[in-house]
Every structure is written in structure tokens, then in C-alpha cells.
Image 1: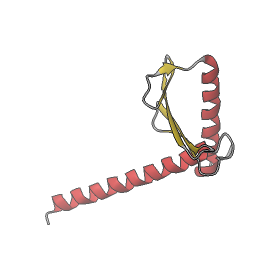
Image 2: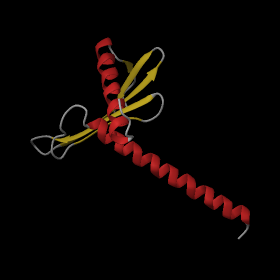
Image 3: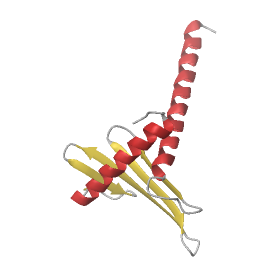
Amino acid sequence: MSIKIFSGMLASRQADRRAKRYRELIRREAKIGGELFGPIPEGGRREFFCLDRHTWVWHEEWVDEHGKHYAVTTRYDVRPQGILKAQDGQPYHYLTHQEAKHFCKAVKMYNERVQTQLYGATA
């Protein structure tokens, strides 16, 4: 095997390991974010996390009293002009002032908890 092929294989494995670590951190952050607003009902799932510099995701799943499964994914796109929101493939619209206040509060709580619970930062 040539050194060039071997080097390429090593680089590919390293990239795979970095991607796997990144996905695991996102999962852990999403779990912490999902717990911001109280306990998650049994059989449900809730996640809130920062995907990249401009994108936040809220995902929630639950089963109603009749056993019907629901899932809602809300994507927030933070821009200089305001915060855009889209749910389950619907068109984006800007948050109202009140929604933006709630979103900013959630982001602040998320950052505080993730920094302390996951990364060990102290206030």
C-alpha cells in the first residue's frame, strides 16, 4: 500500500471520529436543552439545540391519550434582521416580539446549562 493511500485512509478515519464526537456532543446538548422546560412526559422526546452559528432546533414527540404519535420540529434561523421560524417544512416567518423574548431566554438558559453540565464551566 502506498503512503499516499495510507495517509488518506488515516485522514478519513480521523474525520469520521471527529464527526462522530460532534454528533455525540449535539445529542448530549439536545438532551440538556430538552429538559429546560420541565420534565418530559413518559414516552415522549424533546430536544432543543444549536445546530450551527445561525440555526436552532426544537423537536418534540409525544403520544396522546388515544395512542396517536405526534412529532413537531421547529427550526429557528437567527439573522441580523430578526429570528425566522419554520415548523415541519412550512414557510419561514419572523418571530413576534414576545416569541423572540422567549426564544432569547431559552437560548440563555441552554448556554448556561450546557456550559456547566456538559463542559464543566463555572459561573
